[in-house]
Length: 145
Length: 398
Ligand SMILES: Cc1ncc(COP(=O)(O)O)c(C=O)c1O
Ligand SMILES: [Zn+2]
Image 1 (cartoon, rainbow over the protein chains, first blue to last red):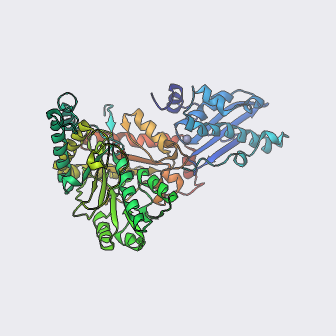
Image 2: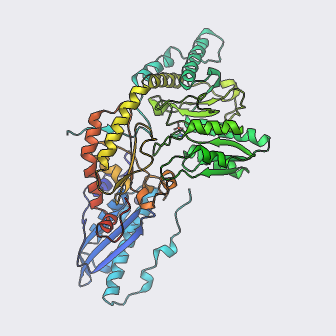
Image 3: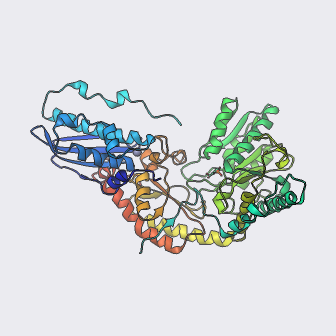
């Protein structure tokens, strides 16, 4: 058995929506070089709908495939729907990820949230702050080995 | 070049050699006896076992009676370290000196011993991945029971000054163990000349079978038992012997030692050609000392290109490699070996290890030199971290 599903390998080998949007309406970056995965997502938003999305990811196969899949899942969708995207849904759409790789897919969900929050902040749009918990206040560091 | 499969992960494991396989074959249906049996079928197996012990002893420069067969390198490490610790503790010595970049078979054994009341000093391995005998000398205390330092590192291939360390230990009257799993069969190892008291080796790292290894324990040193049971291996390691495995190991080691000089020269040239070629990739760097390293080991980091992605992209080109990136382990941390060199996290995550063996060819090197720059470029083209280097948001380190 291979490490990853065929879907994951497809999205790793031919990632969708790779790139940068220079005049993005919202940009979200999560992760850091210490943990080894960094995801950056760029959104174009028109009338509350995501009209374009691009990503750049420093990370493993799982992180890149999750970024690619997550951008596909929110493209053309209203913000309200994009905010409902979970890492579980991304992992399922990829036909599953190895258990120890789930943390890499969490970043996709977080990066999208961060980009939408950036859009709200930039445009002075009121929003429910509880929708955007600081992920690093909840999340403990990984297990000591 | 036409697509090919290049297996260059020989520090993980090697393919069996023809000669090792041939040595194993008769052990399944002809020499199948139990060496403990008194009848002729058993005695034939016992004879073979003795001949294998002699071959291995000859390769290490010791007596056959100083060789004990184990299930591999991990078991040998566990047994050597526990034995020396137990022996020391009986004399009130509960301090052990080792290094920060040992294999987990050593480090986790030391962690257990710490919980059992031992004190462990892990020496810093510096930026080049080499410790000095003076540092070992300075760390030895009156209550030091054991010094354990690996002969050559499995990730960055750096070779330690084992003979100098051995002399220091001998002068101080401290037991010296070396995990020589990556060294035996690859570089000259002689336990007498190197002043080594205990040593671990593993067959599958030199074209022998997996699941079999051996330890050397100098005559007169007490070896304690990990696996209790029958009287095999002088009561130090119970269990009916893995005759086929042992025969394969002895043949593989004999072959490796016969060809040692020629293999070293050839692999060193291939290694250095790879390193020189890959260093042409912008913002790349070699990890570990360029000279004091195993003939077949290349370990490099490529800024902004994460290790697992490099492995997967190389695999798509038919090239089998490994990395010390966190995402290639079950933990969220990059390799403890790369971190022990003082590398920043983002450089440790971007490492790629290429380990050559005599089964590799110059064409393999050509192929890797042709394909790997494209692999690095592809991974960088997806990378937000790479964008940050390029835009000057963060400074280059390599
Ligand atoms: C340096 C070192 N020590 C110990 C081991 C463990 O050997 P084995 O796989 O035979 O248990 C390995 C290989 O994995 C190694 O590279
Ligand atoms: Zn990851």
